[in-house]
Image 1 (tube, rainbow, N blue to C red):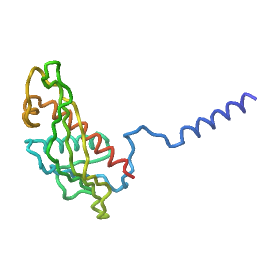
Image 2: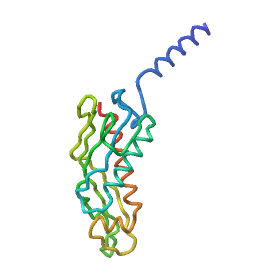
Image 3: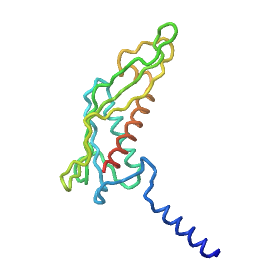
Image 4: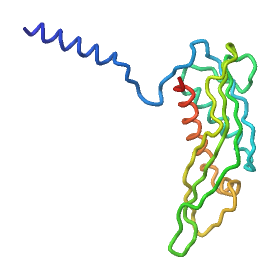
Length: 177
């Protein structure tokens, strides 16, 4: 009887472990031949200097963190390429103090991105309106007119936004199938 019970539990454990569940954000449905990915610097259509470089670097780092890919800045000699453009950055007042001073902004970056399998000449992922939003707390009574002045005051805000963007984009690409 104990042997039968142990056998049933073992079978249940094997079946449960093979049910197909995985951690969200860690899937990978890309074709097996895609190993080398080119991620040239995105086009900067905004007025924010360096946002293209910071975002492109963050996407490269995120792909490399997945462990399976060789990521380069060129679009030549690769299996697939990620290309994109960063649209103008939007700042929106999110909160004000009792004295009607801005205390928090929402920063929204919109982009257009494409991931293309170069061997099969096939677009595997495209999003013409990929958005990422983050909050920025204002220290003191400082009025910020545009994203460039915000990022010049706090470069960490741009880096944090780029990492959020990269995680979202790479997860979308890897799980798009």
